[in-house]
Length: 118
Image (tube, rainbow, N blue to C red; front, top):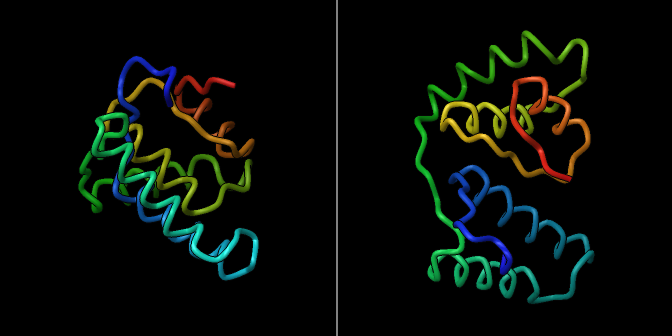
């Protein structure tokens, strides 16, 4: 994040998923008690500083695009619902770069023409 010249654009869907994943990791003892709140506070600090930007997107439009992606790619690639929603949102927002740690989500994003850096 510190090396990026421009803010990283996220959606409320990404923000929700991150917060829930952190709380779930703490519940499962994957991170220490209190770390979920600490990491969420760090996220908010990055947002307040302008390093992160939350972009609003119409959920109905996202779901329609996700349906198209699912019909086109899931039988061949086995894509999960939330992964599809994230790619659909990126496409609707017109982004050119998509960041993911998930190899299968990477394949979907690349199949739809998004640049996915390593």
